[in-house]
Amino acid sequence: MTARLRALLSRRSQLEPLYKSEEEGAGQEPDEWLVGSRYETLRPLVVRARQDPSSEECGTLRVGASALVMALQRGLESDGTDVLMAYLADTRQSKWTSGWATLGCIRGDLAGGVADPPLTMRRLRGSWEFGGRYRILDKLVLRAGVELESETMRELQRNEEVLILEL
Image (cartoon, rainbow, N blue to C red):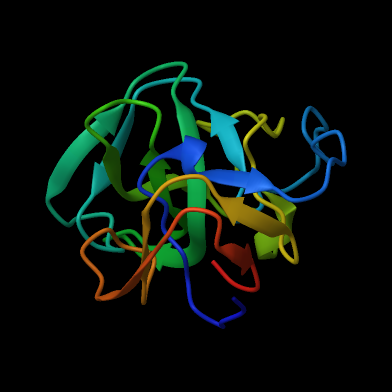
């Protein structure tokens, strides 16, 4: 099944690569975070309901959590400071913690990074690959957007094949 939809998995173990590439990129330290990749949190990280640093808190990712980056966007603090916002999800706990978090003030362009980042730059195992083909191991929900509250498009069944085109 190929679709230009954003997929949100209900558990990490529900997706299996159809090819073995030794988890391409896992363990490498690029100079930017990648959507679809997992990174370890270096300090507690507050997540918010909306892509607005002043919106209500909806949880905190603990130190050492495996944060899955679902989206990256620029945002503005109340004082006008340009910040990098990410929609993060810790899917490795029975009760997910997810929402928008401020990763830091942007230095230069978006790829230039942030000062004092709250996430490691090293990709963890279990990161997804754009263009990757995967087999569904158990039922999962395909959603229209990144947020867990976004519209449900359909449920995917065991052994269906998906191609990740966009997150």
